[in-house]
Amino acid sequence: MGGARITILALETSASVCSVAVCRGREILAESEVQGPKVHSRALPGLIGRALAEAGVPKRAMEGVAVATGPGSYTGLRIGLATAKALAYALGIPIRGVPTLEALAVGAGSRGEPVCSLLDAGRGGVYFAVYAVEDGRPRTIIPAVRAGLEEVLQELKGWRRQIFFTGDVAEKSWSTIAAGLSGLAGRGERSLPRAAWVADAASRRWEEGETDDPLAILPCYLRPSADGHRRTPDGGG
Picture 1 (cartoon, rainbow, N blue to C red):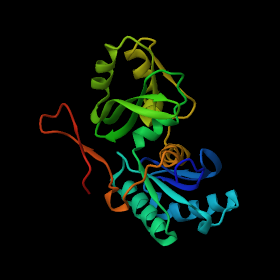
Picture 2: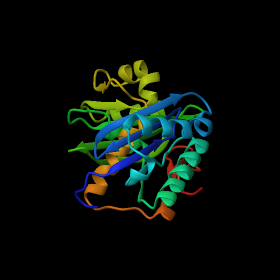
Picture 3: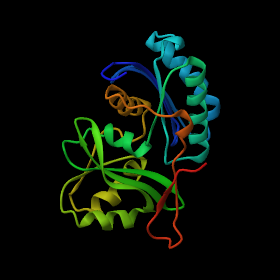
Picture 4: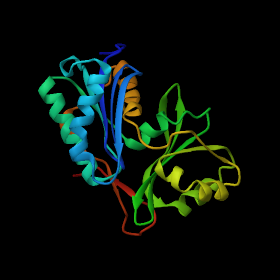
């Protein structure tokens, strides 16, 4: 599969947006989404059908399935992963899991600045990671953790360089972020997760010959550590 521009069905269910995209390589053929609490299970089948119809591509023509693996909503992640694995199995096609914060960084559209991906973790917390994105490929600078927004801003203050922010927290708490970093923060037009960005990240890896074992793709949860300060990833179910 290395070097090929394959037709991908991508699912993003890790946040409040439930999104489906049909892409050929990094070209978006169709994208459909709905936003709201607890909509994923009832909305996802219809969104898949709508995206395939708009793209004019039958389901059997799909050559790969890409899915966001989190962190994010426990229920949303389980629904997305279960659906993606069922499609991959039924169609006999490969599957690729893409971390949600990584997909956000790929789609951020930064101009060379480090990209800070921020998603709402509930209870005053955020899911947080920082990447350098070069030629569309993210390189991790700070691995994904769960923390408080003020803790994140305090850590980034010491960088003294422009940082590009994306994610739902960047939209909801932009005034706090901008004030906390005194002119060092930038953001794009769209900060909510998109299935097209999941497809983009997956496509680049498939073009380079990377594959995933379907059994090894698990939701990525980030739970508070025992000391309540630094957080650690938990890939378990």
